[in-house]
Amino acid sequence: MDACARLGRSYEFAACRLPAHCRPTQAQVGFWRQDEDYLLYFRPSVSYGGGSARLRDFFQRGAVQRFSGFQAMVDCLRQLDQDLVQLPNSPANPLFSHLCQELQSRVLGQDQAVEAAAFKLWVHLCKREPLRPLSLIFYGPTGVGKSELGKSIAPALNRCLGEDRYRLVWTELNTFTQAHSVYRLTGAPPGYVGYDDPPVLEAVRRCPHSVFMFDELDKAHPEVLKIFMSILDEGRCTAHREDKAGSRELDFRRCVFLFTTNTNLSAPETRRLGFSPPPQPSAPASSFDAPLPASAGLARRLFQADESARRALIRSGVLGEIAGRFNGLIGFRAMTEQDRRLITARQITALGREFGLEIVHVSPAIAQALTPALALSPRSSVPVLEGSLTSIFLAHAPQAGQGIRFRLDGTPDRMVLVPA
Image (cartoon, rainbow, N blue to C red; front, side):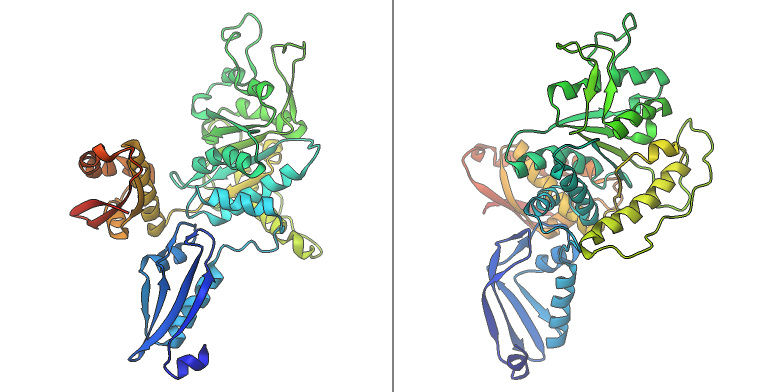
């Protein structure tokens, strides 16, 4: 390749394997010299739907890209190679890789968070007789994918395992602000109001592999958090009502518990949560006295991140005995502009389905124009898309359900749907 470049010749590589989340999975890749510049091309053109912002930006430039010289082209390709989704020192296991791919296809721009969640899930699935459930806290700014990842876990596990085993049970903790609201989790005692209402945690009787997701952990009363102490540590708790066999015990050992919070646990000083007592001074950060095997590198990195966030959780007012029971605390970063554009394209595709239209491609220029710069989160930009695209989608309503696939092309001031 270098010799061809020095001689100013072109070169083409047939059937090159492309990174994960590229469509197609293989393409012809070639380059040629034009004056002092070098042009790199892909045949056919490539679209990328993964979590790497650099790769998304690279492939959105088009099927032919110009570089100021051969070395500039090589440097760009090397940066892309380093930016591929790598899982350093992670287990070479098909289930782990499959989980990562499934979750990354749903959650954009959060590669490290997805990797951490997939690793924790993989470890839990490998246990034949777990002693306690898996418990994870997702923390970070609003609208960055915490809830989306939580909602994706049960379907991803079912697809990876090839069976309909897991069920999602979603609870908003912002309505658990009073101490007595704990009874909504385990059930009210006989004679109390709400005794006949089905408590949240009794879902485990119907599905032993439930995925319990509790949104907005920072809004819950501390007494509500205490109910999780025995569940997360022992995998069991006692219900107020008996089941058909006369047992009051709820067994959560094969369940997954997910909690989300907007509290920034990566900050040096974290704001305190509601009703908690002043935090005690935390112990110094833990470290390993001896190097671990290379295969444990990912586990060590996640441990160090967990401990840092765990101490921040204690500083926020959560009792140390509760904070220490979570298996993992996974941070989500703020979305980049490129991430938000890709999410806009996905939202347009989802909006098209609501009108019965299958949209397989959205012009990057249109996605950029329809992405509000000051939106609080990607969710808040949906009304902009609905107001901008409803008339266009209605014009193609007669073609809905006919199996026609569309592209949203044109310019931001003149958008058109054309058959793909």
